[in-house]
Length: 434
Ligand code: 2M8
Image (cartoon, rainbow, N blue to C red; front, side):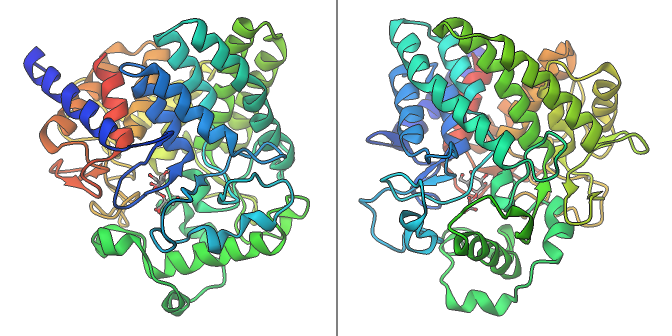
């Protein structure tokens, strides 16, 4: 990309982040997602570190100020200034204030991939200062509590991995990976007539999850809410899955915490040990030697889900992933399913292009997302594949330079889809350009 094009792109990204800043956090999008989202904030902080490190720390601080007593970091922190009805499901539906250990702020009761420790480390590394050390000191015990929550309360499978109790916890809401585990959740599309979906007022229904998906999302929240979001009887929840993305992020977080511990005067040793155990567990429980792929484990059937989605490539972000699995992930990524190459002819899709249920327009069932490309880009650099990393970076930046800071992109044409001014797209492209 020419220097001039890169400068234009940088300016667009900075303007997008500025426009989405809201007092003490950044909204993912003014229209579709007007509150604070957990993993969005981590990605956003990585981008803000390049232009406004003070805001990067503020972003993380605001999110972790809404952490629950048990250590969970909620996937949404609601902005109390917004009228009821600006997002569904909103604070009334989640009803978090009645749950034990909930914070003063209204939040959801579920989590998202724990990419925050890695983000905090990147922010500090990008802009080290007395303020960043202070910020790390404040965050460190909270990040440790987040890890403790996931590794202790969420290890329903007993194999050393965290499970998710809702597709929203994976961040890739309607991925085909969840079709199997969701099929057993009792719900009818008619349930959604009782609610008004906010998302399809702002985006084409054909690009979003279906009404049946939403009915199931709502049913799962209702089941978890009914037990006050307590985790002592998780096995009774209708959706229980070990996700490769969530668990790879969990392992990377321990690596980042080991580095952060070095800065704040804590012992890095236990973090390194935990990181090694998570990677081992991920390989033991989610890698299928027969197909050479990582796939989510449905704890209700104790089987790996059949769909080969982009989730299977994300374990590459683990620096200690064994060579055999690195090779297998690269083979899958470079296959016609995902088309990774040193010169990519099309953007990275979120689902296997050759699968019959590949949908180029529908949200996480095919379209290309910048956060996923960015994670894989980092993994490729970690595992010394500068050729493939350069190809992916070029494709990612080109997509945004041509289409704008869209939420997601058509995986064939590169056309922008979803929100046109999406924060993590802006933030991560800033990081990729640096
Ligand atoms: C999407 O998820 C929310 C629910 O949490 C939604 O569809 O309303 C996902 O893309 C998720 O990964 C993201 O964090 C969120 C906000 O950008 O939107």
